[in-house]
Image (cartoon, rainbow, N blue to C red):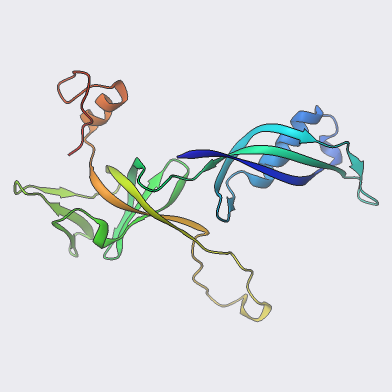
Length: 209
């Protein structure tokens, strides 16, 4: 789910940060610049991990900023294909189900990747899974489900042309993940999974419906 990626960049330290220790000032500026940002073909940057190299600071001409060349590692969110994850149903439409994890919500289950027997209830505006035993399970908002990563999509965030700034433009997320549904997680099963227990409180099972 998480990877470490190495980045080289020029960091600028403002005068108000001069009172900080150099390492702290560098880390704060790296986090401000990269945290919660998507790097194309890399993933969603979560947090600074460690500093590998840094140059002597040079004061920029006429700016008062100190320029430092740095090489560092970031913790990045980028699940691999086939990875199994847990998330909550954020919303559902006839076009699929949107899933959210704690810090990322551009996860989509399209209709063709739902479990066999799934259908969209237009009256309730919710997806329903008709199981083989005749029961109905609803993909309600907030329901915890298990899913498998199938593919990822990247979209460059190109700035609008000046004459289109006022027009409504449907921008796609810079990074989104297409997944398939693999099952529901009941409240008791989720608690047992955290403790490493099965549905009867014994070590072992995964609580998957």
